[in-house]
Image 1: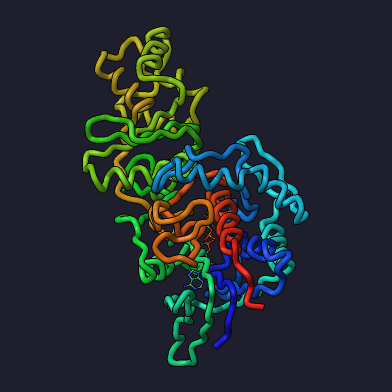
Image 2: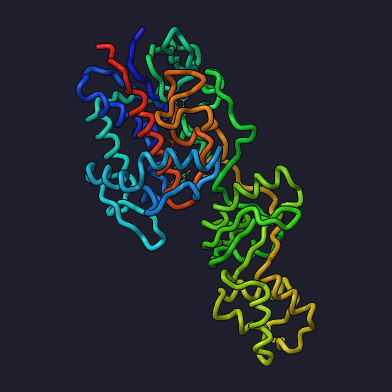
Length: 424
Ligand SMILES: Cc1cc2nc3c(=O)[nH]c(=O)nc-3n(C[C@H](O)[C@H](O)[C@H](O)COP(=O)(O)OP(=O)(O)OC[C@H]3O[C@@H](n4cnc5c(N)ncnc54)[C@H](O)[C@@H]3O)c2cc1C
């Protein structure tokens, strides 16, 4: 049977990073054999589609507050081992120069995701990593101190096997399953003694509204908004201010994507969970009401016209039962309150999210508490290292998920080679 020092399962962002740093860490003890396997027919699909084909590689300011998962302090520990500055230097060295946009997102100056992927593949080759694909792993079994990595049998053909001294699991989550990230890694992890969080669900997913909701008629209209998840008792669970896009199925855009995992998690435990949209971020219902009272002679459209897209303003007034030409001074207290609520505290009924096919990340996975965060080595299965989205970590829109992949991949790659003489 073929032997390798390290087998990496999954050649996405995290697996590539782990391979590069495992390979680089063998300098001085050359000869280590590092093999990276991926089940997909072509590599790096998620890197290529990311950021609309431009690949939002990271964000200028990253810390654990932009993430959810096992525990933020634990996430922070790993992020600090490979901060954004190191990511920028790392890509610089690969000749991928990054530029920062107004939103804080960093993209390659060429605006081409394929440059990011090509650089990572070249760096992998330079670090001595043998990448093989399509090679879909069906199981990883413990054998003595090491592992046997076995191919998923493709219809009765011979199954390939590799004996590995260490394994790095970098199979990603379940988002965009057609890319090959379909959650198989969770089964591999549980087979080796790990647990998976009780709930695994789509994150950064567009939200679906019930048929006929008035916002769906505004398909294509986008506006800055504050989107909040509130519990049945009115407690704020999460809040994001960013662009919100109305679509034919419901809500999308960064504000909707960011809030989706909080809505799903809260709804699973509390049926009273509500989604509230404030179309005038920075205004409170009270301040907006005051501004209405300050212009009694104005028509109802006037305070909205300059601040909201016209179609949206008209639809919100329609929803509140207010005619476009109605004077503010003619509105009863109740009707003015309805207008204020529609604009600054719109309760939007959500039927669900669009699922993994449209999600950009996965919430849940392998708890970080089961890993040594200095090496990403499993505490329950020594010799197994874990990185990337298969962990119980999900970040906001803006380059945070890749930053987690780079940081955890780096720690796992270096960690897998620590104190490790190669087969020779
Ligand atoms: C449409 C879209 C756009 C995105 N845009 C951004 C962005 O701009 N910025 C950002 O930070 N994040 C973005 N993300 C999120 C980001 O792509 C992921 O968080 C990141 O790719 C996760 O890296 P990973 O290596 O852990 O997993 P993945 O990239 O999912 O890679 C896992 C790999 O493992 C392979 N694999 C799985 N199971 C097996 C098996 N059994 N055997 C062999 N191979 C296997 C898969 O084929 C895959 O290649 C986006 C995601 C999507 C879906």
